[in-house]
Amino acid sequence: MNWERAKTFLLVAFLLLDLFLWAEWRASRREAAVIEMSGEAELLRSKFAQLGLTVPEGKGPPPALRYFSLEKERPAPAASGDGPAVRRFAYDPETGELVLRWAPPVKTQALAGAEWLRAYLPGAGELRPADGGGWIEFVEGYPLFEARLDPEEGPGGVVGLRGRFWIVGEGGDPRPLIPPAVAVYALADRGLIPPGSRIEAVLPGYRRVQPTGGESFLVPVWRVVTGAGALDVNGFLGTPIPDGPPRPEDRGSVERTDEG
Image (cartoon, rainbow, N blue to C red; front, side):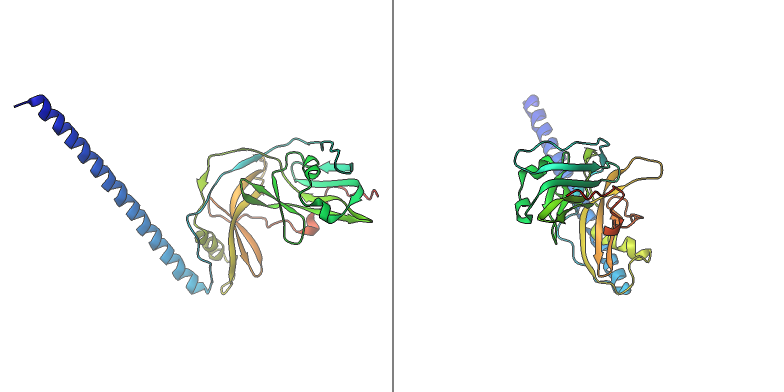
């Protein structure tokens, strides 16, 4: 009998058996995770029914987002031969507040896709049109909910922009967010969403957070939109963000100018 050949055959057989057992173990782990998630989802549906909450069904797994630091630099707008001359540029990197004024005025339709506008906002992320006009800053495809820039109307057209944007720095490793239903329950369990409320949307995005005595940074959140407004939940920890989204009347710590 050829023992060398027999030993080789046995080694291959045991290797195949190990691979088969490993695959079975992975499959059983996935099945257990699905069962566990299904059980949690069923429990949450039961709690929502008790509270009279209507929650939209999630589509697919939660996205993977990450923390981001914020830059502290005060950029200067670049010169642009295609755009109007900058008359005033005031930017606070901590609050993100911007006042940008130019001359001569331009027509509103001329702002759509204007390349020179990007030169006037150094360091800003992707800007997408917002409902009702203006732009919202996006970070890696997700909205930074507080970052919005609106056109300033004046005699003869648009004379500048006013609002908030941040210069995003380094980011951590991507991590999956908690399920959106868990974010809704975190609010309902604390009485922040009244019983019987209709949840209109649960949206992933970012919020700027500043711990007491610490540096501000961007936190992934779930934004829960109801008929009464919007509330944000930390997308990793499941805790409500303590301060609400900034109101339009809160914009204004950067002194306004009335240059014509």
